[in-house]
Structures are given as C-alpha cells and as structure tokens.
Length: 133
Ligand code: NI
Image (spheres, rainbow, N blue to C red):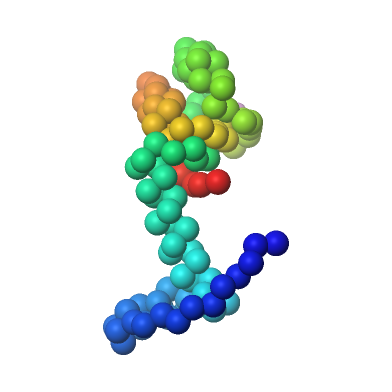
C-alpha cells in the first residue's frame, strides 16, 4: 500500500469554492479525493503530450454489414497488434456494433492507431479514451 502524506494547501476563497463545487459535482467523499483526481488528470494529460507509456481504449460504433469496413478495421489492428491488449465486440442491434479496443504503449502510437480506425469510411462514431498507468 502506498504511503499517504498530509500537506497544507492555501487557496483563495474563489478557488476553494470551485474545489467544493467539483467535490459535489463528482460526488467525491472529500477534498483530498478531488485534488487526487485533478493531479492525476494533469499527469495523464502530460504523459500523452510527452509520448510516455500510457493506456487507453478506443470505442467504435459501426455497421458490420459493410464488409470492407470490417476487413479494414482488422487489417489496422493486425498492423498495431503489439499495442492491443484486448478487444470486445458487442452487437447493439441489427445494424450497430460496438467495439472496444484496449491499448497500452507510447502515446503517439496509440493516437496513430486510433486516428486510423476512427477515420475508416463507414465508422458512425469513434472515440479514444486516454488514461495513464
Ligand atoms: Ni456486431
């Protein structure tokens, strides 16, 4: 278990009020959890900007009837197989498939595969969720 350190924080009234709004909005149990959330968000953002080792998940919505589209998605995933930890395909209905692809690797490479997959003709929606390790 990681050791937790206490420290004092000085904030202007306005910023403290903002922190408390964040606590309420996200239903954090306390201010410490809100600060933890903000610091981690910032560290993850910098890791992605600086091409560090990160993790992420691509979400794609498409119609599997478009055979060419499915083949293209598979080709791209095979080209970047060293980054892919797992993928899951769920059938949302007759025309809609939801695919999630979990990734770990250098940030720029993860962005590259994400851009390629989301840009495939026929993708209805695509999003890369960026997180850290
Ligand atoms: Ni499907």
